[in-house]
Length: 221
Image (cartoon, rainbow, N blue to C red):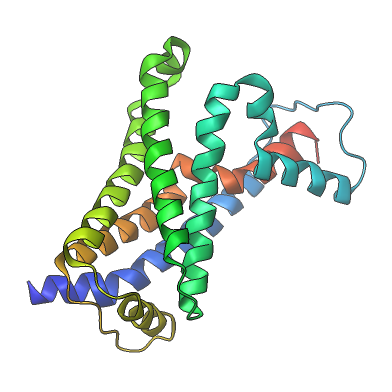
């Protein structure tokens, strides 16, 4: 058991970050070098790089296309991504020594609620159910599981935020880390590490593929 804890707490974090970096770079290069099999230019394309950047930023941050076509789906999809942004901000603040627990609660609750919302939406809406595959349900269920384990850790054996902060700073500084001694923390850490490894090889990498979808296919560059 001690060997497993050491692996999850001291080795797998670096393996996960390496897999994330290699996976994203590898898939981006693959998309960059792929020959064009289809050329669908949307007119009028944004005339300048700045206009293209504004268009992509508006789509990435507001999900404008989803809003125009399906507002019920937009509510869940946009809020889900907002919850991830909130949790990233909370994590960065915590690493800087600014502990805002309410941000973590807000992000986690929104993520849990919207994950369940999107699962129900895909099950109840006939057209969404027809287009959904087991992968979409797996991805949403994985996020929901992480939220549930996080909640269980808080209620049953929460390590202090300072312990978690010191552990993460040790990882980032390549020092020998001292992880919090809590079983549910190790389970949560393991799930997050699996998510990081899985991310670049999953459909969730659409945040990277959007550049190629707009710039290379839609605008013909």
